[in-house]
Image (cartoon, rainbow, N blue to C red; front, side, top):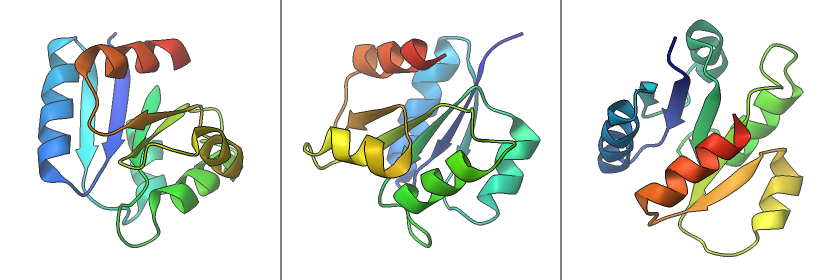
Length: 119
């Protein structure tokens, strides 16, 4: 069975490109462009890894990640945060409970390496 990755990002280009890259590497990918009912979507899909944009509207990726990490049924799912701000990696990890941070723009090798490192 292939590993599942869930991507939350409001940038449709990022969702499309990242989904294509990961699908070609035989991951099952679910791309979501908002945080509406995000916990329900996570519980239904049961991803092995979540990629979360920090600046996704509504709740925001940092708060959504904190909720994921405080929820019993989702707290053990690794989360990698996406951000365009290339600073404060350790602060973001400490503040949210995420496993890693991926800075935009990113290259394919870095994306895949970070995903494989948390699985």
